[in-house]
Length: 442
Figure 1 (cartoon, rainbow, N blue to C red):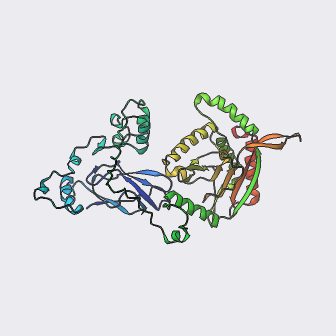
Figure 2: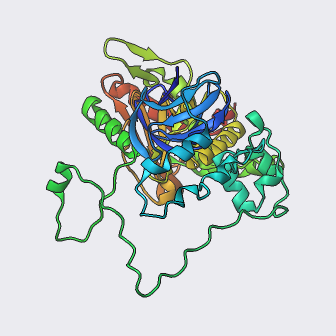
Figure 3: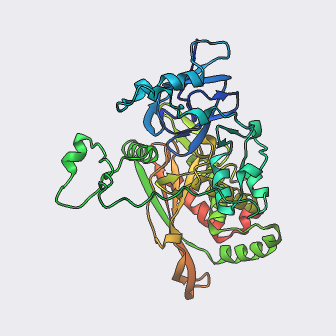
């Protein structure tokens, strides 16, 4: 009996996904651990590995298909002892007649060599029918460095080439992968290429559209759909309360400069955001009433501060998590954020690295935004929005008027779980850690 290969649930909350790319085709032999497809979830593109051994008998869902429900059968795998699937050569020879009609030809035409003959060439250990077994990230890095993947030996499962293999190769020593040749110029009497097919619009889209204005219509990505659904849920279900404080940054900036000078030999560079993550983690432990989740009939209280950090990526937003932000060193937070931020932009985060967390921080100061309010990231109850640091008139401790570097921070709280007084205590604790930063490392 054929083995059904079903759309996997690559994260606890995944309900559907996009079958971005098949890395095998019908007739290929796969073993446990082989990468068969790339699945695009709402936040990342992840690789789908084979669990069983056998031959790909039928691909039921073509690549590029969106909204494929978890559990949908996407392909059939024939075991070694199954005799129900034709051999690749026999199948290829039998399919042309029913795949598409052919123009009338002389009787001898059926004897022409089958066009699938090259596909019968034996596969090398590193590829199947010419396909290099390498992760998408390894391929991208190899193209940038000019490294020939054929010359590398993979250290991943089943000899698969991974990022570390490419980075260890000497840049420029291999030949770059040949570029796809450009199509030949069309002859004068050739028909003009057809324009891309328009996106099929829903009825509600047509009702909103103003045809008088030049426009394009594009389908929402899975990420954008998830963002829209979760933020609407947050604003509708969680009554938000907003509390803003102004915070002086001079001491924090001075300590950052001193620490970066000391960490330079280690290749670590602290950002202001790294230090704010630490400050929020410490404040949440000091005010545990804000480190909670409202669960309807219960309130979940967390004993550790795992901070979700809003990161803008192409097509949307993702929130990688700095675990144990209250207990980690500043250098550890900086190292973790550098890695998480890079992999977030490449779509390579694991679900457990961006799902969960106990509170969030969103910093738009680098964009010049002075102050804003952020939408709570459910099921959390707290998010702190950070504005730009800027020179402002400031009343100094001795009462004199001076100039200080200051920023505005606004906490958004789920009022079902967090009282206003507790939210105010959290913002006061956060301000204290930022203005007296030695308290973060004591």
